[in-house]
Amino acid sequence: MGEYSYNWQHTWTCSYSSSTMVITPYSVLVILTLASTSTSSTSHGLCDGFIRTTNTSILSPTNQSQNAKSEGIDCEIANLPTIEIIRCHGYPAKAYEVATEDGYILTMHRIEHGKSNAGDDFWRPVVFLQHDFLGSSADFVIQHHSKSLGFILADHGYDVWMGNFRGNTYSREHTSLNPSRDKHYWDFTIDEMAHYDLPAMLTAVLEETTEGDLMFVGHGVGTTAFMAMSHYRPDLSQKIRLANLMAPMAYISNTKSPMGLIAREEGILEFFYNWFGDGELLPSNTVIDCLASMFCKNPATVGLCSELVFIFAGFDSEQLNLTLMDSFMHHSPAGSSSKTLLHLLQLINSGEFHGYDWGSKQANQEHHGEEGVP
Image (cartoon, rainbow, N blue to C red; front, side, top):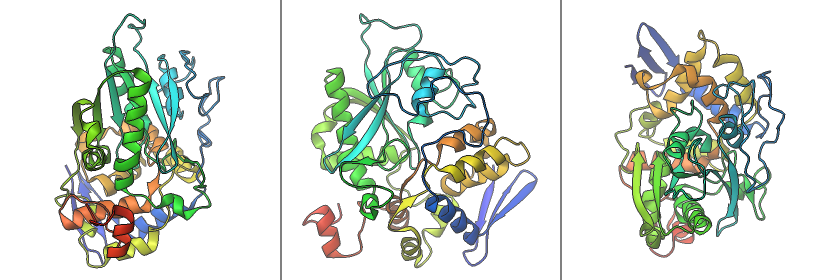
């Protein structure tokens, strides 16, 4: 187990085992800026050089199922999109698109059944998995099928659905806005994920499966949006048979990480807003992809990749599988809005569970209604 010491004027120091890594606030900002301003790309494996399957599509046509296992590829290290990871392991995969009330087009991925329980005569309870901040549906299938939650549930008889919040690798479409040109596309926080994204996806799943209810599994910000959803859509709470919240995030003032520490610094919210506040944060792009290929495979440099994770999540080397860092960094960060990060910093700083504070009474009423910040 390691420790962080922090001095805003100078450095963060992360000490563990017999080594120490020093991280300056400036270096973090440079990394965030470089990754955030680089052109987002849906290309995969630009710097890898592994043998690809003959099916090279990033996303197969929506609702088209395929159960073809790729031969000659190590599915755990191959840099593939979610739907092809699923197929690589020999499971059926489908992609569904759903539009939210405010025009964002989200992609969900589905594993209808496991390897040994196919058949229409088998009743399958529905389970919906929702990723953490800067994550994606890949988070639930990135490991070996004996260890990945998505595959484990499918093998145990569940109809598995995995959502993607607006702005990440798989949910960058909109009915009228272009995420590369329209800054307004990125004017969203956890509030919009709770108000629009989860309700749209959960409703679509219930309609497609004709089930009366489902089970929910959320991780991190996926749990935050789920808990906040009951404020906007209390009717959907009646459709949740069981909710499983992994690393739930509501009252998070005790967060122990560099991000948690700097959130309490005077003026830091204004500083971060001025630096990142009106656009995309950490998209999956060529820069991140190539850095992962160059540094996260090598045992001598994989520690650099893990430190980037610890900046956001806090230091816990005992709970991090370094052999997965290469695969993990090809999929995460998967992108979000800068304001979502600012929302998290507000929650850390206030110690409360509330909506995003847009900075003025008028702005809050425009976004939240007459009553202001919920």
